[in-house]
Image (cartoon, rainbow, N blue to C red; front, side):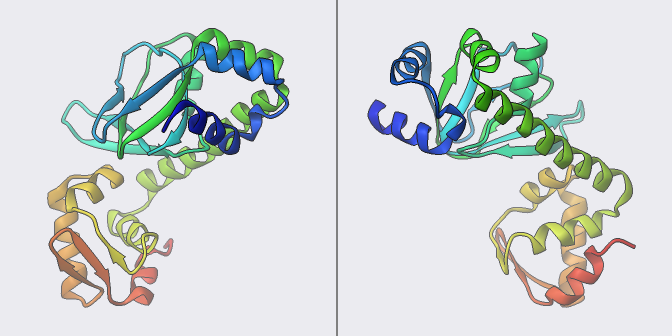
Length: 222
């Protein structure tokens, strides 16, 4: 994507920037850095300083908390039109990151330097409303994740996760485990149990939903 295409896509994806004058948008773009990264790139890591506020125009970033034992719990994903609340909190609190962000696919982002982020937040109401509205949405998502991890059985969470991905789920057991904050061996045993009961059909890096109704019974809260 060239600079003109990036600017056009940025305006379309982030309506919060509407209302800036042409000169204001020009100054903003002049201050920003265009970041390009390949899939698998670590965009930020735990305890690293925050270098700016990225506005994603292409790709997706997975934000996860990693344990000392190597297990990973996915907190949320950032896609074009969204922003990372962890980055917002790091900039607002002037603290280091407390999780890791990894590009799931090739990424293009416009990165606002901290000073530009602070100025927009203070002086442009639509952008301020966007950032704090995002905080509210992500907080609700994280509370739901905490509730699921703390109070739901893993088979319930696995069934719900599969049902949310369509009839054919092309994914590895390890990727499912990462999304659930579990380990591959346990997820593989649960999938094998589902298959033996006729709920799913398993093949290499693929799970086919065979009996969605019974999976919904498992996924339903007790």
